[in-house]
Image (cartoon, rainbow, N blue to C red; front, side, top):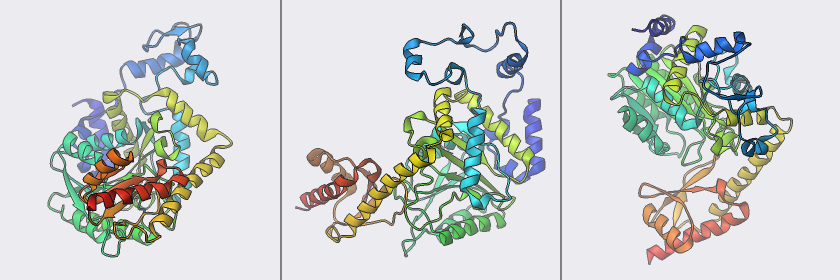
Length: 431
């Protein structure tokens, strides 16, 4: 066994034996090499003042070599912030400012210790890293029945996990904490469960209330107290887009340091929060009372990054960093939030008019980009195709009855017409 791997594993085992047991075989074997091209290049950066012939980039006139046709469109930026490799764990200034952002937006973290966020190639990459580190063949991934379909690929197909579902809503159309608890406790024989929490939820746009959030935390703690090691991944892709009364933090804050058998992992990003979908900048952050444990997990995470993508794109990290530092950042973000909220409110106004009650109900939503119709008389896939072919309207069919509508991508003045078209299509199919 590599000496560094042995050291990292011994540290994790010493600081929290339950977290060590949570690791997959790959998670136990992975490390970030201290000796190699990157470490030697880092040493040369500070000492090689005459010639630095280490890392594989090209230098010209003291700057990273670049094409003017590219730099002319990016003239605001120093070439050093664009063309050189970003560190595998991400741009240090960006990691620091994102950590400050998490703490400022999560009062539940008061007095708790979290690690330094590690930059990922957006949310899916962060989930994939967590999957590699913690998921072994046959492990249980606990998710609600209304979920993002990529979970099946990321955890099931890639890592051979078993997906365990529970109904998202209970009979009162609130979050089904009892179902979550039952799903966790069903893993007692395995002794391990990976729970994915995604709020605002994709596809329904639902975020729990404060009371429901406490029930979720209690369900997870019950699993830990029953002797189950629980890894909780908070997929906070749509964080901050809360339009009504709901819990307005990430569950990461309440789950951090909840119990020695609970490891809270926050996966988030600039993708939707800052409206930069194509930049592909995300983060993965761990919570633990032990700084040594956090450092070891971060080393293993960086090892996964080094072994897969090597490092994330530097330009987009720079763009996000500059945006977060800009004086008008908060003002502009609030303006965009207001636009999305106005669209969400308009959707509710249209749906609550009663005009369409014979065709569908809708699942509770209060946040995010989406909402879901529960169709009464036609199948979702049939309706989706008919909408495309006859009305040139795009929606997403989920199962037999659910049709997801992304109000985030429809102007507020067009929302009434959108649902009128969906209703017409339903009536066409009923004939």
